[in-house]
Length: 581
Ligand code: O2Y
Ligand code: MN
Figure 1: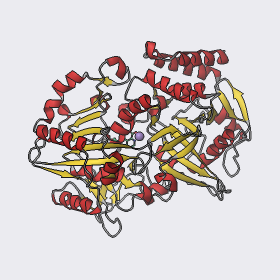
Figure 2: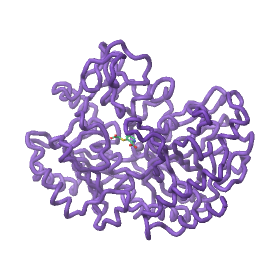
Figure 3: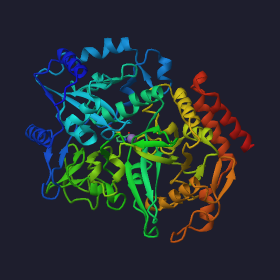
Figure 4: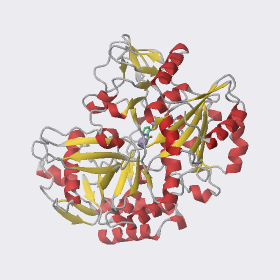
């Protein structure tokens, strides 16, 4: 394997602190993966599923206190609190050194230290970046192999350079009291201890590809965004690409893998990415995007052949399921995946029947599946150049106020639309259903620096090119007076994508409203849908009273950024209020 002196010296340093029994350098090979799987089957970390029906698929049950990202234990360790901003938890580097670093002392005694060199993005792309994760969790290694390009490909990309993202991870004691996810934007470092789950432990994903990379993007004039990337191919064979940001529970993965309905004969949607986009201007002035990831870490509950057949096809082999249920004949199962089995074992390992009060799968249960197994996987996924982005789409779950779709007047207005994004909560358990939570650009938990400065970076990126993408906002969740969804969603969202792409080409009829350009009557075809012209009117309505309230909510949210809010954002808010008056 290619060696890199900077990595070797860092690994030596980390081994001296964590004191593992042995060190394994991961090459990302199939043989290595198979050996790790055998090890995990032996010690119970993995449970074998029916290998005939689910080839190379395994179940993992995480500790019941370790089932999701932990935003309250996630810190940005910038020198000053202001640089982390009001929407991040901040810990000073000195406090991190005093409070978190000692937890790593001897934490790998009796364990193997795995060194994972990985590449985020296609091989030989100028947009791709190298990370190295040190971990004591073989489950993390197995997941990182699916989610990234692991081994030599990363070391070759790095060569003798020293710029790589250093991620130190240990499951530690798996104790929530001793759980911390710390990011050091200046040194591009991550320390994660006390969790073995998802976004806390697979450091290439949210920690590097968003929190650290957003800092790198700001410094180096590119963008790291919480966005899916998809291509829409017309019957004429022309493919146009869009990138879209949605808060959770808005159907982001479903949109990324959309199946066009029968009315769209000859149309095809290609999935480039389902979660993260890295974007940079090319010499042609176009904004080009790559998906830095190589796999999907998707939410299982709610994913079925009816809602997302492409995801189901992607996860049928070579996948790891975390916290789903398992049937008596060793099939994985979760709520929304076909008929409930008569008997199963739930995500905690307890007997389960359809009469059980508890869910069979944890609501945040996941599948880790190779992206290339998705039937809609774009052939451009491995293109080092990336794909040219025609439109940015922002969205949220809103019962009122937000029309099905509107187009921002220009780039700065689009940045304002992204910065003001909000979505209604769905978590019945918290009792807070239907409350609008602001989540600018769906980056609230992922922006690794002051969000006021992040809005400024967006403004700056738009000013760099006359060919910047057009900006849109969508809402699939508007309801009528009886609380019924007005729009069918899923594959029918294709109709909205079509209007968006028409607008990008200077076509697509629109009416100008105080909030932006809304489709003119008839511009989105309802042929074949059970939607009346009046319902379509309701879907596209812009109610000035509701919007005055919306503007108030945005102003309140912006208030927390104080001096760090770019004046152009305040100007956009004033202009919206003027147009509404
Ligand atoms: O709960 C976790 O650890 C994962 S969160 C996640 C996973 C895949 C894609 N997106 C997300 C997210 O929270 O946005
Ligand atoms: Mn995400």
